[in-house]
Image (cartoon, rainbow, N blue to C red; front, side):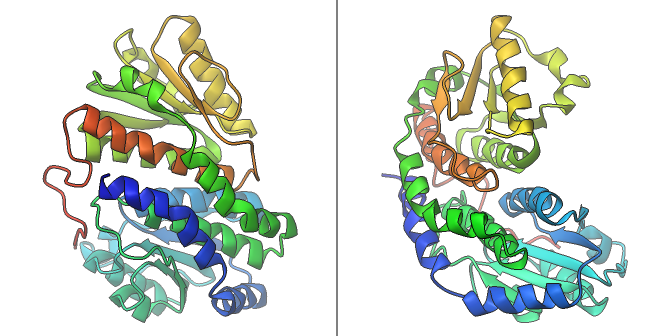
Length: 339
């Protein structure tokens, strides 16, 4: 078994353990946000962590009405900008917490008065030392270059913060059931997508709303582990030109969550299938020949996390089907230190 698949299988237990700890850290942050409500939010992240930040932007908008901006670290490290982040909730997400550009941007955010929060797996990392608040991912050591359990734990940290800050009892109750739903996701058989994706060279991965950050993560993993040119797109944006390149040899993978935006993605995929295109849709209900099953919905804000858990085994299997090692992507390393 690859390290990627083994670490994917650890995620439910890691999430359960994380949810049982750090209540004071979440409480202190929730109290700070209640005492001074943020006017907006900002995120600082790269790679998989930036996809978690996209998920965070949706949650903050839906649950708290906050507009969220992604801060390009180059503003600070290459252009010397001192961003004005007074009254901002600033989420910095990083598995390693060691990339110099992320650390420098969080330093600038703290200096400008932002409420900086580090969601980090390595609690002794430089990032954890400079943020005002730290929410540990508690994913444990991760050897595979392709992040899996640490990404899932990042998403859970974000959802847990929302539940605590907004006193959302239904979300809190659903979080307690999330580990068992993640375990159920590991039992979902997505091997039917192998014949669709194994011979491909380019493809789209389509989602919308809460699913957009998730399909960006899917596309990155397909690039990293299978050498596929996978481009993630919003089910709304794909109509503005990108759909012109879809032909009979160009597969599309869609995430059809049970929410308004997710249904848009499923509808787009169904339209492609009706015209004879090669399409696979992940959803809780069967819709198309290449259906990728998901467990029954748990909570609209948490179902995207379950979808990630169901996808990762497919990514590992696909890499091996294409003759590649999912643990050793070409030209990549576990920690990427950009400046």
